[in-house]
Length: 202
Image 1 (cartoon, rainbow, N blue to C red):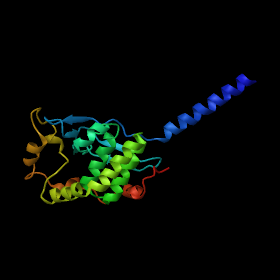
Image 2: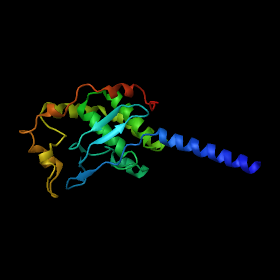
Image 3: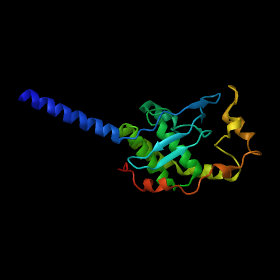
């Protein structure tokens, strides 16, 4: 009887664990191509992030250029750099900061939600979240200014085949006369409402 009971408990525990794992909607691995300095990367496929248990999806489009998490080098000794378990969430956040369809606070909250779903350590995600809340205003304003000046962060299909010695800084300067930035700015997306809190929506 004890053996049967133990087996039943093991089955229940396994089912609960599987359920909790399935409840997470981790961001799929991105397909990326680096520029020459490995600081900036371009998405070679759409990155689709289904938020929590909703049917709402944030799509970061093929051609979007990201620098992952903009974390000062002084913090690297604490295990934080541009790349980590939080990198996929950082790509989504980078896109939200560029398009600015959501408010800055909503974008930051969606970063926290994405980090939770990516199982980023609680301490790390707190530091990153507080960092963007404290220091994100200037990057937000810079993005708005760059878009006004006609710069872009989404490359069209025809320009994805750039060479291995090209840096984003130099390449981007050549795009100003030929890219209409309005083509990569969506209307106000429905997913912004999910960023009114930092809780993973059920």
